[in-house]
Image 1 (cartoon, rainbow, N blue to C red):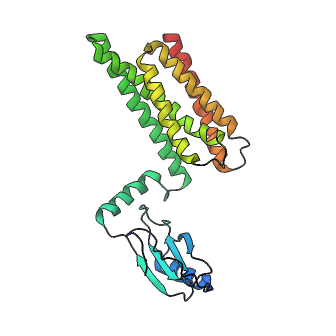
Image 2 (image 1 turned 30 degrees about the vertical axis):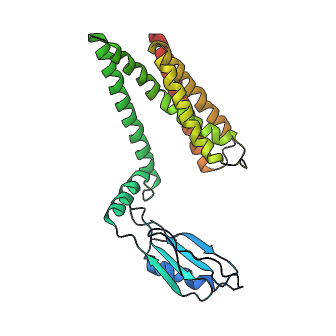
Image 3 (image 1 turned 30 degrees about the horizontal axis):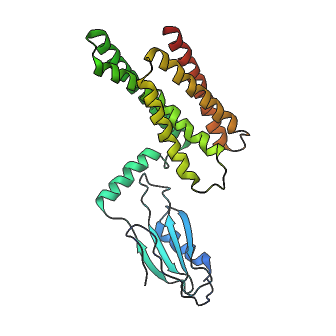
Length: 260
C-alpha cells in the first residue's frame, strides 16, 4: 500500500525483509522520457536494501516558467511503475506559475540580474514615496498620527534591510552543527526587526535615519568579511553585493547625518 499527499512523493513502510534494488539506469531513462525534456531534479530512494524499497523521481523545470513538478515512483526491487502524479489543480498551477516568475529559475543569468536591479529600483520608489508622504503631512498640519507614521517609516525602510542582514550574519556565526539552527536564523530577523521598530518610535527621525543606515553599512561590511574567502560563485555574489550595499548605505548615512 502506497501512502502520500496529492503533491508529494509516495511512500510505504519497510517490510523488514531484505531486497536488492533493480538497476537504476533504466528507471532514469524511463523517467526522462516521461518528463519530456524537463529533466530530473531529484531522486529519492526509500527503504533501501528492503523488499519494500521505492525509487522516486521528481522532474525539473528546465523548459517551463512554472515550478510544478511531475513525480514518478517505482518499485525499487522490480522496477515496476507504481505511481505517477502530475499536478492539475488550477489554483496550485497558478501559484506555481506566479512563484516561478518570482524566482526566475527559467531565466539566464542576465535576466536574473535585471530582476534583482528592478526589485531594488522598486524598493527605492516605494520607500521614497512613503518618506515624502510623511514629510508633506508633517509640514502641513502635523498631528500625533503623522509623527508615529514618520518614525515607523524609519524603522521599516531602514530597519528591514538591517533585519535581513542579521539573517546572513546569524547564518555565518552560528555553528553548522547547532540543533534547530535554521529556526534561530529566521527568528533573529523578527527579533531585530521588532527592536528596531521600538527604537525608531522613541528616536527623533533626524537621528534615527543616519544611525540605522550606518548600522546597515556595518552589517553589510560584516557579511562581506564573513563570506571570505570567496571560493565559489555564490560567496562571490553575496560578498560583492553586500560590499556594494555597504557603500550605498554608508553614502546615505553620510547624507542624512549632514541634513539632520
